[in-house]
Length: 258
Image (cartoon, rainbow, N blue to C red; front, side, top):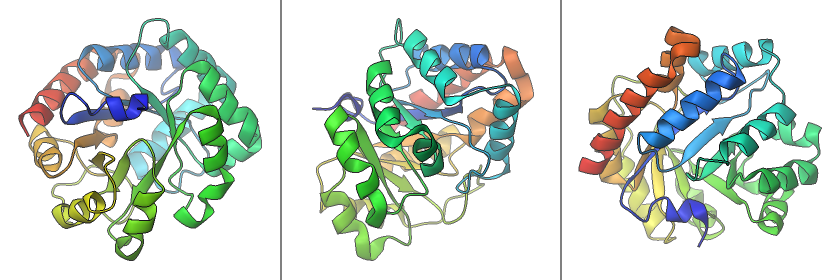
């Protein structure tokens, strides 16, 4: 059983996201530790990229701030090694295929395994092209997380049969960002997923309030929250960790009530 699968073993999972290096890597370390202490079940670490096509303006700006502060992939591996001295929560990287290719795919995935990363999310890699990464991930013991979007209906069965770790359910068409309401029929997507795999599934894109987190976790196995956390970092900068700790505790409690 993978560490990611275990993250869902205690009930519905709260999964926060942070862009590494925004505003700097020391601040990221404090934020990750605050989220872990607040009860996060799995933490997504974004590796900044100059053209993050799946992201809305909030996370695009975080990517720009992180790159401007001198964040590199090697420095992020060092960050994870440092976090792993005291953070036991499963961690996955969210980044783009170009980041992996430019580093060298096997070198990157081997470094993930060595540093203590449990999985990889590549939102710009469609199911049909995952063969560039999936065999390497399996060789080094990483879960390549599959995404299912509202437009995936005809392909959900095939995606789920080959998935590992958990299924990332994209709640809305378009890019990441806070949304006032989520109108997609998540329940129908989840039923289709559960008919084709025993892996847990968690909903992301647009979740920002405890009420939304409770509703989405109630329909699935967990809630993923990114832009709302990145907004707090934009607001509080290097002093964001305690604010994010409080926010994460409220979100974890809401998911637990689902």
